[in-house]
Image (tube, rainbow, N blue to C red; front, side, top):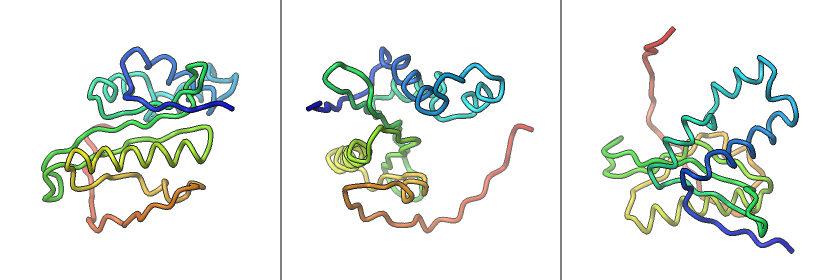
Length: 150
């Protein structure tokens, strides 16, 4: 049986995580123009992975052969919505619901250990088939944005 290990993501992991996600999303068709545009507009493009991994708040899951089987991208937000410290989880991806649940649990436990007041996830996390139970709460802040690009 494969055992899964979890650890803080490092810059050396960028290429492996990128290939893991590209393969999961596009199989053998990552070079088409349409898919290249989707990758460019994704949370897992290489610049994003590099940014998040430098911060030390992202994790990877590996199997016995050191293959990536999941990851999350996290970064701290300071003084947002009257909270001193918040962990923003930009993206979570894994091969199985068990690994996804463990990654979410790691983000939660790490934030509690570091005395963060909350962890923010995209609401799409509610659509995942998780084996673990989490008491997600809606963020009651209504937010709008101004686009600075066309």
